[in-house]
Amino acid sequence: MRNTVIEALIVAIIILKKRNNILFLLYLHLSGVNRILILINRLELIKDIVEKNQLSEQDSAVSGTSGIPQTLRWSAGELYLLDQTKLPLEVVEEKQESVEQVWHSIKQLKVRGAPAIGVAAAYGLLIGVREQTGMNLSEYLQEVENKAAYLDSARPTAVNLKWALNRMLAIAKTFSGNDSRELYKQLEEEAIRIHEEDVQLCLKMGGNGVSLINEGMGVLTHCNAGALATTGIGTATSPMYLAHQNGVQFRVYADETRPLLQGARLTSWELKKSGLDVTLLTDNMAAHIMSQGLIDLVITGTDRVVANGDVANKIGTHGVAILAKHFGIPFYVACPYSTIDLNTAEGKDIVIEEREAEEVSHFGLRRTAPEEMKVRNPAFDVTPHELVTGLITEKGIIRAPFAENLRKEYL
Ligand code: MRU
Image (cartoon, rainbow, N blue to C red; front, side):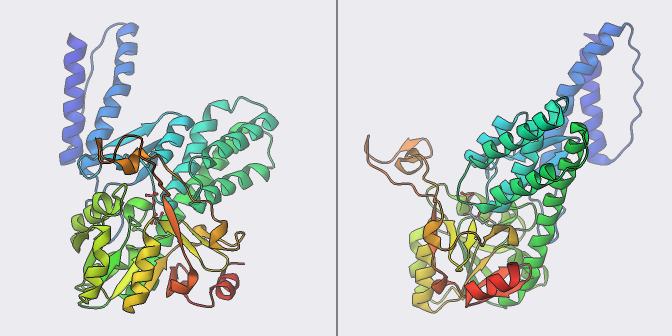
């Protein structure tokens, strides 16, 4: 009983301390080793509660956004993912206990968006191999390879997943020591580098794309290629956040993005929270809104840009690009080098993820199609490079001829 009271006091004091930055000193008078052990055990639980409490207060450290919780974080050797399936109704962070849990989090889109799944997979690999450092090095290397292949199988289209895992594997394959613990340390350093680099890449894309957004413009985007899809200020949204920060007045139109509503649940949420002027549209409204002259620019993200400049992105992007062409609206795609795949020749070679029929036959939990209805659910489509005005990258804006210019910059 006495311990329970003390624990409650600790929770209250830690929460108060976080809120007001007041330092409290606590003296515990416990008798007996058993009591201390029980208390330590329970403190672990308490730590979890406190970490969840912190999340709602956590403002993004990224410039230009505000009040958006971090997509993911690595803290004291643990991975925490914001569960994006619960947004915008609940802001919940989930500690990842196993590599299987990370795999499912990627598959179920708890963490999603090409750059974010790359960073999550790099940390996920650490979760998968952190308890095996007692193995000899050759067994450990095999374990690293197996877990990387497993994580890579979670989703096929976004190349960032493979890219990040390949970077981790390169550390393992070129490791010159003989201690598995030392290799784990180096893998952790690489995962942190991938994470930090992602933040910087977003800022650079933003800097290179910001001049495309001028006073009074209407900018349309599809899906969520925002802060939530990365660990920084997003890809497609990075010029928007920076233009907003510079005081440019413009309107954003966010496509709802059927079937999983990333535009409605995530893009409109994060832009609104950051003070941008954002209007939500259902996907089939884009042509009408464009025909009224309300859209001057389209910027989307991408999951893979291939050697000829074709881009895979969330299903529906191709349609938006065709509309943009019809109405003479520039269509830009923002992507860091981690999304550029020069080993794949053309868009038709990209594996398009096909997801469960229930995502289409149901709206949330409610069935909206007849029982046993035949359904297609490709999660992505490919926009041919002829429809792309430019690729906003960390190196600048790349324009046609894409095959030549991509090779020049990235080979
Ligand atoms: O299925 P999702 O939500 O992972 O799809 C995300 C997208 O299609 C994004 O536009 C893309 O990953 C670019 S993210 C910066």
